[in-house]
Image 1 (cartoon, one colour):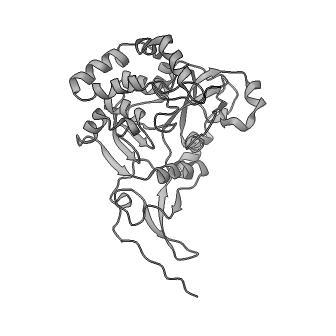
Image 2 (cartoon, rainbow, N blue to C red; image 1 turned 45 degrees about the horizontal axis):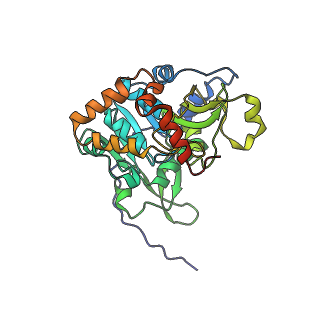
Image 3 (spheres, rainbow, N blue to C red; image 1 turned 180 degrees about the horizontal axis):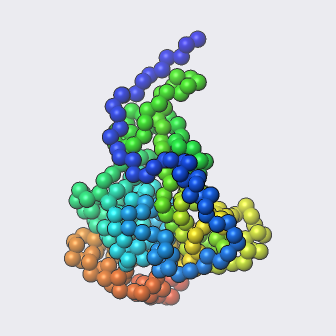
Length: 332
C-alpha cells in the first residue's frame, strides 16, 4: 500500500552557514593533534591567549546558567576578542557576557538573549537588535545535532523537525528526500567549532574530565571542537578518574588546555556544588539597561580584575560562595 506523504512548504532556507561541514578537513585537523599523555595545565589567560583568536568560531558548554565556563568568557571579553562566531545553544549568561563585550558578529541561534525565569538580557537584546550580528536560526535539538554530526564524522544528519516552520526558513538546513522511503527530511550540517569551552567537576592534568549529572550536548561538543579548553572545579589524580570511568565525559586526547578554576561557573549553578547567585545576575541585568552603566559594570567586574579569583572577591568572596554552597539543593 502506498503511503501518502504531506509535503511541507517549499520555501528555501535563507540562513547563512558560518562554519564548514567539511568532515575530511576536520578529520585531517584532528589526526594532527598530539595524543601523548602530557600535562595541559595552564592559566585561563594562557589558554585564551593560545587557543582563542579573533575570527574563531566559539561554542560554550553547559546548559543555560548551569555549568558554564565563566572564567574563559570573562577572559575573552578582557582580551577584547572580536569577530567571533558563536553557537547559541541554550546560551543564557554565557551569551550575555559575550554580547556585553561585543565579541561575536555571527551567531547560530537556538536559545539566546533570555536568561530563563530572570527575563531578557537588556545588553544582549540591544546588541542583537543593533544589526551588527549575522544570525542563522535553529532549534535546540537541531543545533545540538549539528555537534553530533561533527562528532560522528558525517557532514550532516537527516531530521524530521524544523520542516514547515519559520525557524527552518531562517536556518541553513537543506531539504532532502530519503532514498529509502521518499520522505522529505531536513539535513542539518555538521558544526566543527574552532574552540569549545566546557566547565567540569574534576579533571586530571592531562584533560580526562568528569561531570556529575547530565552532560547535555557536551559529549558531542567535546568531540566536535577542533580545540578544547576545560575549566575544572578540582584537579584530581588520573587514578581517581580511572576508578569511575563511566563518569568520564571528555578523554584527554580531545583537550588542549586544563585550567583549575574553583567556582568557575559562578554566577551560574554548578550541580552538587553551589547554587546560582541570583542577586549578582540581577546586578548584571540592571547594569545592562544602559550602555554607560554596562561600561562601568564591565570595568569593575571584568576589565579591572587580573584573574577570576579577584572577580569572585568583588562579587562577595568566600562568605557569599559559602552561602551559595549551602543553597545548592543537590549538595552532597
